Image (tube, rainbow, N blue to C red; front, side):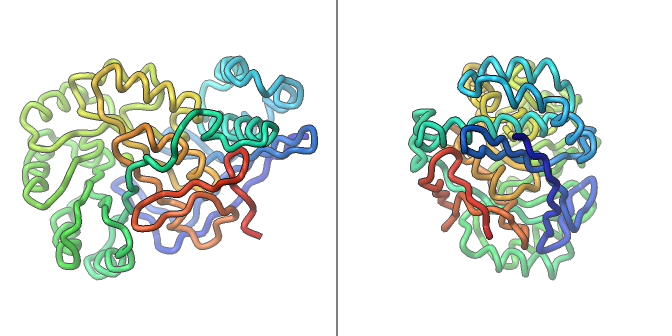
Length: 338
Ligand code: MG
């Protein structure tokens, strides 16, 4: 039995980044039920990548028969088939990958991290993200994030200076900064990065629009801070072209199409001498817990969006002082919040 269901995540605060804002986030939950076992996966469609709930559901529907009949233990073979069937809506592929691995782990009665040979206690601490807002709200959000040792600050608009000043009113914690393609001129980007380097910032994510690799190469020659590709990279095949241009890449399951491709990205990035960040879209604990399975293999973790919601339908990975603890249960270890 295959079940496809949408869920509207409510956000605690309006989530604002350089290119838009949201008060809610619609996600699609996939359940694969076989042999008395349910495997669950989540798709968080992102308009930046031409994704929608409607198209995601269509792509999942198109895989209904293969997911009902294929040997789920042959998950590599299944991935190749799904990659052929779905050429857009990578978030739909992520939901399938998660549900299959969750099912396989449960069928074997082991956590997926055991199946993968990963020690979850070696993961780096996660940052907590602060969206674009007025100075008063920024100060309030930073105070509320007191438990987190690392903050990721969204920038990329005319408010940048005001936002960083508001953060620094409240804390001297290490900051990471994400411009979300917001700086369109490389001279402007360099000025911003040189200034951020004086503000206790560790690295800058996607300073300029995706595809501007000549500008990024120019910027990196001059930048005092490491530059991390996010919108410029989705899957492993995108990575070699970024070597020597960026310092690192940001892996997200919704871009890669799941954990199997995420693992390929880890190995490809390492082979190319790149640092690795692990991020997320606005997702529930289901997608975030799945992503956390890759965290021991990366340098920087940014897995916090489940903490930005007020109606998370799942319970999974927990965070204390930035340290992530994966659930001990079988499969992905995620259970219903009800
Ligand atoms: Mg980003």
